[in-house]
Image 1 (cartoon, rainbow, N blue to C red):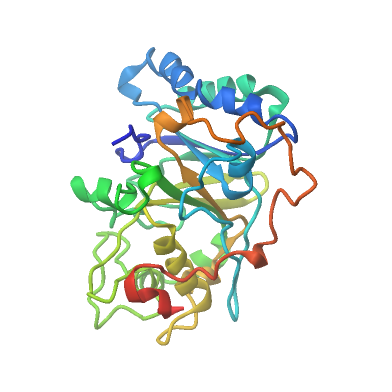
Image 2 (image 1 turned 180 degrees about the horizontal axis):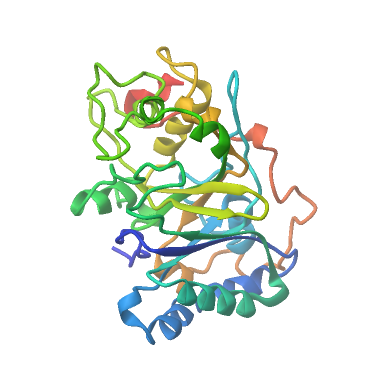
Length: 346
């Protein structure tokens, strides 16, 4: 098994999320820079090893063929679908590269972000930068604990790691979906604690999930449980962090979810925004608005540091630049969960 990037980790106290676009014609320079990410991370993190500095690199659908012409694509990589529900909308936005930087200290995250962007120089431009922080006991800015249902132990690795049988050319890889949500805290804080708990499906103070017979069908938790035709639940790993700016009154949660099959996350999003037979939409969306949405492949360390050669590896960078580098989201898959018979659930 090739060496996977380190996805499964303890919740971090600080994180920086960088989304970048590659400058046309600079693909070979970016490929070279990506081979050095691990070394740069080690150089920064070695000074404070107990801070556990990490960095996961993701590559977007529109960038993959430009970076690795002539080489195969991960089976599940595509443009994240748009979700147009009866009330709420989830966009699909551009993004060629993702750097998910995390540690127990923001200074290390900032140093690594600075070093990585310096190494890239003008070959890629940052189009979204979020500095996240731990809020009290792993709570989001809505006041609820976030990430309670992450799998643990071997189950965590199984949830995020592509196997040889699932995609032989990309065993050890993963996928990640990111979305930036902005919260209407004024409207949220106007609710009673009991009303907030019904929105989430969990108690606020003790973080206990409501019983099924009590939990509203449009609660956030109810719509995020994904089961296949055998009744087996499919897990993802969330490493969300809150962020905000008091001057502009912008408060939000940066959702970042990893899975070995992006269809699991996409089914969650479809449930949230388009509803189910039992619910029109996720009630949390009445207070949280998605403003970005991108799917990235997370290749192995081996691929990033020494990508295989292919028939197009010597091609001129930017070939096909006349084509749309960011496809129309309307051309993307429909977001159905391709796990067994659940594909027909869409």
